Length: 225
Image 1: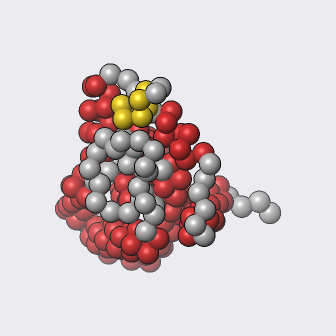
Image 2 (image 1 turned 60 degrees about the horizontal axis):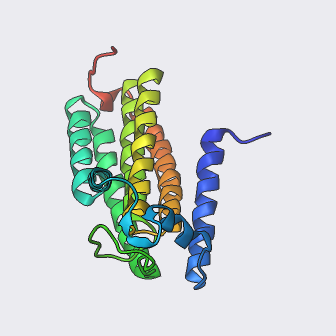
Image 3 (image 1 turned 180 degrees about the vertical axis):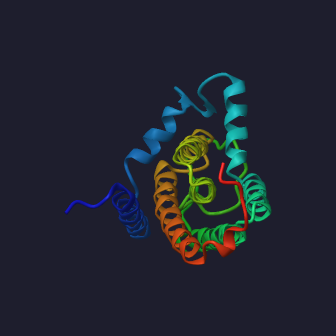
């Protein structure tokens, strides 16, 4: 019996992250990493990103959405909205989910200690190790988590699909912006996405089970729409 995509995709993502991590920890490098970074640089001038200056500035803005500040404000807004709507268990679960993911991201960076790209001049300031991309990982956790929790609270498939679709678009843009700015190897971003997808899928499954057990008491009296 074939696995449902809701199980197959996060499972594949988890194994992909594990494979990428073991490969990097073995001291090897991916041949595609330098080439993909250089695709975003002017030919013969690796210090200059492709495109006009406004594109570089836009990429910095997009990257900022995946920072601790950007994702922190998103998490705060979603948490308050869930709490005020009566979904207090979901609000608490969202905060715990993001805090744990942030801790894991930090520990992975420290433990693996991969150096940042050195083939181009970075167009943004960085302070931590490279693998996995915290922006890619945490944006997946926060954005997919918020979208999924909204879906659990709303119980409307159209709202769920719209929220998840927007989350995927922004998550992908944030990851690409990190490569464009030259602060992450593509494999860093890929690993962050894979871990984030697996993480958010598991957290949503656990939150959904917890919500089902606690209904109707924990949901308060929100409008059915």
